[in-house]
Image (cartoon, rainbow, N blue to C red; front, side):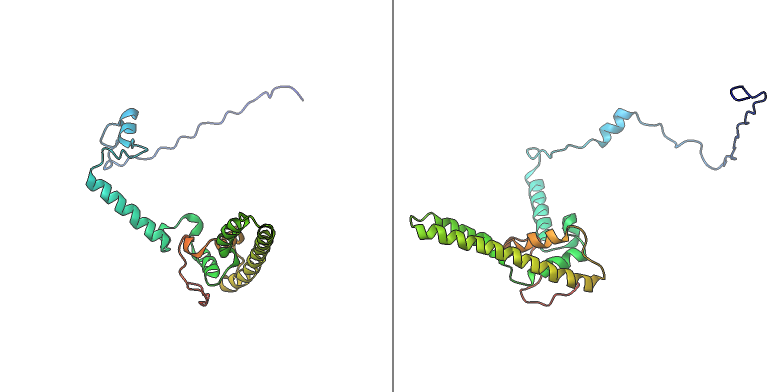
Length: 197
């Protein structure tokens, strides 16, 4: 029948598995389960450290620890770097930028100079400085494009694969920063041979 019931329905028997209990092992954990509010209270920590309640010695220790961690990060210690700067690949990309002069790093001081000169009351100062500013920006973009092409080729030769996603922006943004303000600080000198460390 199409819509009828089966005359005989088979009901499966429940399968029960019994494991023999080890008499040497205790049946419980040996202590009562703590109430939820007690467990939450034990794990509760303040989100913000109350600096007023800290002693002078604790404040000095916390300040020294923050200074040590910051110096370690600036010096390029892998453990203290942010996630975006970790790994030998990122170190290689940083070194590729730091071993050469970049037009992008002189762009910020040049723009401040252009702004100062443009405030002069002379007409030639306004037109000439803005022309120089645009020429510097174009030169900086071209320099970064050439830097990325060369770095990508060297990276592929050193690591056997192309740089990961976001590497181009990582190189370009570092190239547009002044050398003294780069984080982590440059670990190689200008003109040094680029090698995988």
